[in-house]
Length: 347
Image (tube, rainbow, N blue to C red):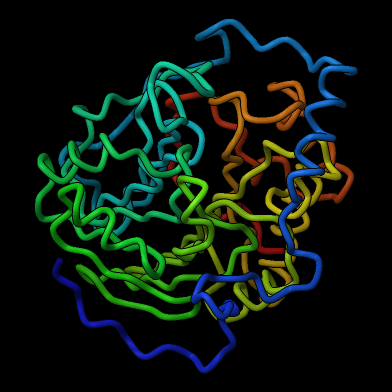
């Protein structure tokens, strides 16, 4: 496993390390629900059936408008492939977030949450990748088969991951890997990448809970800045992310997988909290233009109890009630591409 030389990191607190060296969120109230809570959730679900899952392939789709092999040095566009997988074409680079192309977000492909919507861009139709960002190791964010396929098809791509995850993807074929702690950074192909705090957890089995870190990423190249929140509950440091890494032109924030709220609030934001994250990110830069927010982490896999078409409706309602410009919230169709251009008027 090769590693690029990381840039110096700001002297800020990172995640806690438990005596067994596992990672912990530093904010109060971040403890995960125990087995009794899981049993309660399952009992409640039987008593209160969740809304029906949409038929496969029935949510809105769009034809991707990807530039091959790369966009121009001054151009920036994004294509939502589904869930947390987005192709960002920025500063002449192709950057892919949390590539998941498997049929099920599960350890096996014969059981577990199945896709409601297929990946909007086939893995074989991606342009040559320069950077691949992995936020953590959950099955709906880290697809082992996709790692092998991408490593073979894009051998010069650099994989940027949180602490501890490099050994896993190296074993699956990824050749060039950078591991980052929160607030640490690296520069790859002129792209500055900073790992940012997220309130979540990790684990792919009963025996590896929190053995690897989780994070978001802030990226910058040629004067353009973007932010990928990864998978997160709300925490108080989004304003710090905005202050240190912004102002952003483009942000990707999750809006789905939040019910039942009493169970999910420690790991996933709801749509109202997603808008609050956006407000936290932009607050440190009152003179800057508002970034575009792409709503991610919804509509692809049935993971939780809320109706699958509810997250965007609630996000739009909260966005409007907050008085934010309608053209800055992007509820994408699957496969939709959007050019990221500055707001028509600064705030």
